[in-house]
Image (cartoon, rainbow, N blue to C red; front, top):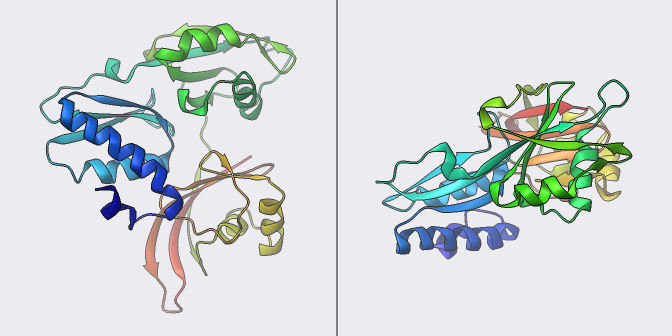
Length: 260
């Protein structure tokens, strides 16, 4: 199946397709649910496409709250009734001296990665402009809570909460319908943040870009559905849809933009 499907995706996505195909095969052979780590939106889309091709299997996605970006996938036989507990999610509140300091998403994620915690065991990091929370896998929750007692120079404590105590995060995503000459990375960044193509190219080549939460430096890379681009100092942009061509052969697209 992987060979047949891989042709519909980018070559550099082949390793994930192979891994996902293994999960699907395991769920099919063993007649039981298979739970993934946290997947980014693009990975969720690929896994959904693969599972939908297999009779008798379904896919559930859960990141701890309805609008979560990072979600765990559960591949399961269609006779199986899934529940929230099947996704093995843990929620933490980050307790810190709110009156005297501020925390930022990049600080928190950087602290987690600096402690040797892999990205796949951490879900969304969210705020309501005062409180901060993060979602992890149950399997790594104790390790995460023991490892993290400071974020930068700020002393913190991770307090476990039930998932029904998740805050409503502040979201400032703005959806924009626009046209592009191409879906090149530099072109999308330039359009989303009103930059020159040259400046966007410089940002990418200077290492200030992440594509789907991974450092990336190829300005000519063609983006596709559900790709998420983070631009240090500017914000994030997600390609939500490609809606055909204009009469002048430009791409009609829908972007979601989150300004820093």
